Image 1: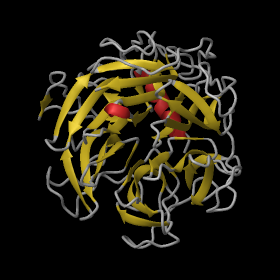
Image 2: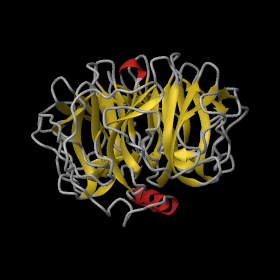
Image 3: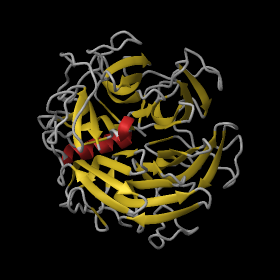
Length: 480
């Protein structure tokens, strides 16, 4: 299913301004200067450039494994995954981007970022692109185990600080590229990966079993760019993506799954076992057994304090079966097994309604988009940044708008950024935030929530300080 990213890149090249040759494969640069060491600071409601290059296309600078220095940093990349540990460090894995030689491909490098020092440390994986997976014995951790290179994987972090990784577009054990459905666990305490479930080869169909019944055979099909949640009981939840259904057909998915880490069994909870299904919206604000989001990929997700699972937008199918950028907002309640359409349009191509910056309003809503970055802060607010989608004028392109949604009031607030697409970054001085600073428009970045509800953002494909477009390796901190 690597063709999906090729389509996204082609669309992005058309949409964006200042595009480099080959859109992501043109100008390439090694990181030639060292960055200062220390925490990133800035006033409230400001962005701080914390690490990485202000030019797109930076190569990876790996250094010695396990040693962080002012000159080490991951290369620019799109669609990696990230998680944070109990000590407040931020972790990054894989994506599609640049290795240590400036070659573009699927990555499986593992990195740790320290917010207190703003230093990156290469912790594992390869410094070259397109490595195959080394699975070892299922269920057994080993220092030689490692997932293969991949992009648009799905990830969770559990209460013990272990990271979980599922699927993505990448490489299994044969070296063939495609979509994966392997499930892995990484323990930061030991630095070891464990292959938990799924296949070691690509493009595996889903095995759905009986709806609502866990068993040892059921398993989601291979996929990329789905969304995930983790509930208070430690169960892993997965929805949609671009991949393979029960018949082995490839397309957009709308299936909902739950994985129990104790029993290591999957349960098909809802949605269709076939691809490209349209949404069933019902009445806004009313839960019903017939409601269901349409098939989609590259959506955003959050979990609220009551254990509800939230879903926003992505590229997918609307109420009429049309395919495009969505801005619909959904809530799934695990205790009832019901979906509720909360807001946004039931049709593709919804235009952003921004209102006044900093002011919540019932008419506010982000435009339809795919591959935005999403966070949930310690106060239970949902945050959304950028993506590839529709601005206030109905123009498609790279976005850099920052939004907050309050699930208690049901209102969106446009916090800051541009209401128009394709905006270059304003970096300012590294480690020193300012009101004028802003990450350039981008999609496929990864985000974390740090201390004091700070929002952290890394990479993606988008615009650098000059408006050139390629894979980025800049790290940003937003202070609410």
